[in-house]
Image 1: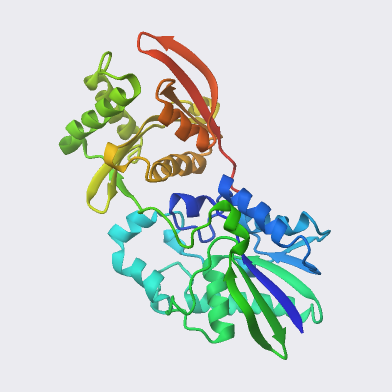
Image 2 (image 1 turned 90 degrees about the vertical axis):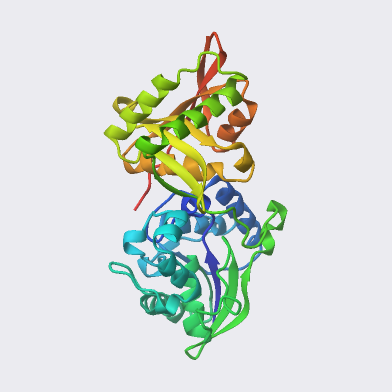
Length: 374
């Protein structure tokens, strides 16, 4: 008999920004690293003989939790990877929900029927992951193994090997990040002690399945939305400086048009369902020589602030600049705009310097970008 601990990876960028990950290899988040520590403590006194994971970064970093208290070499197998979603890789859920609503609902609610060109099906993943886990078990009879994989892949494996319906999210829910399933393999049959347990995350304030609404975006149409851009920038200016002194609507509008002329997705209008909630304006040329990207405006309207949505705007900037080889993101923020300074600090920005003008003190802040690793 083989004893198996099947573990979902820690939180990574796609989970945080609400984007499809699949084989896209995003970096772990700060919360993800805290989850890794909690997972390490869970397994501190658990005897494990062999450690395996998917070869994707988020899985390998998760597996390192078990190496904190155990001298275990890490074995990787691409057969344990997440489902390959083809053209959906890196796409934001909010955009998919708007543009591909029926297909996305099938992916979530009726996955056995989901199929798009260039992507794996759930049946493909069932066969791939089952073969990988069975091979690991075959070489570990009488031993205990820990295997780190991914949400859909684990769900497909459990559905196939335990006879559970992947279309039944009540009987077979998607496990949260670092969820642990305890299984046994004997005489070619898998049995389960428990599934998708996250009790080790209690100290982190873990809430099952909790997440903010998923925003979608579209390039700003300056022909019809120039006034909207000006309105958003003016509101951001007032929030930062207390009044509109020094605000030049024509200057900022002209700059934004130039940003979009150079890069079609440089200026994005953000929506929650059909309600416009904010803007993201990237100056994609600024800093290119020094391999940093520049955020000219990151704005949410007052009604949608403090709801955990800002990271979805910042995530779009991060993914754009990482995709284009930038090593950092920079921006200016008024020192007196404490809420904004706190937001950027929370998501990894640090102060590089400052300058003072008639409006007060501006901080130059930077976030370093981790490279994605294949």
